[in-house]
Amino acid sequence: MASSTKTLTIIVLTLAALVGSVLLLTLGPRQAPSPEHALRLPDPKSLPEFELLDQDAKRITNDWFDDQWTLVFFGFTSCPDICPATLQVLSLARAKLANEDGMRELPEILLISVDPGRDSPEILKTYVAHFGDGVSGATGSQKELQKLTTALGVYFAIEEPESIDDPGNYNVAHSAHVVVIDNHGRYHAVFSAPHTVDAFVSDLPILMQAYRR
Image (cartoon, rainbow, N blue to C red; front, side, top):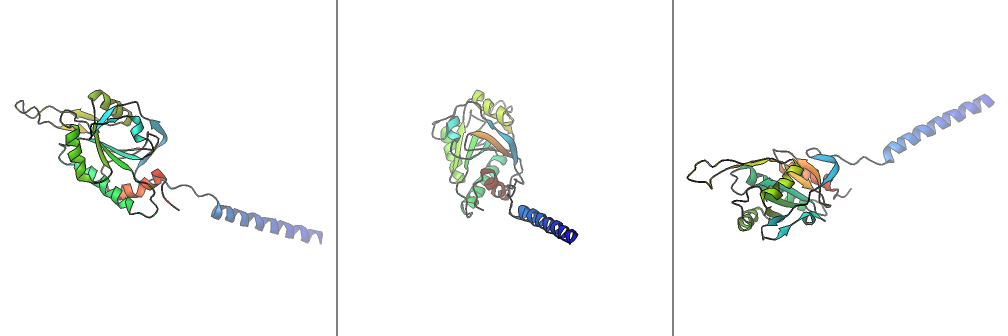
């Protein structure tokens, strides 16, 4: 009799352990989803102190990024294809996110011109206006631009004019990735080219953790 009782006890304890394991797997904390397209930094990086001018000729410093998420793209207004195409994708993604149920905040979009010789605040203001709400422009001296591009792994170089008779007709080679700055002004993630609307719509809520379960 004692042996039967012991065997029954072992069976009951084994079943209880199995049920507990199933419940733990089913009801336990779920791992947060990971972005599929963006590369998220393990530890967000603080930006160096910098000073730029925006499209209204107002000073931009590090605190401009506080309390908002920002998609930063380095380009220039005379760029024939990559820059307008990228800004269009970002603008469309932002508009699509605005219609997403549960999206509590939207990222800002900032074009930082690496062509300060031609891109005055007035030119930037006219240019970014083509891309809708939430899009701003800024530029600064080569020294200030280099601070940011070096910290964010962005390459740019002003090339020689095509003709000595037309010194203003030159190209600026630059990286095409989009940098995500978090609401504490830190380098948080990066999207590599080529860019698609769906990639940003899919990953930004995960990066920003601004979605409802």
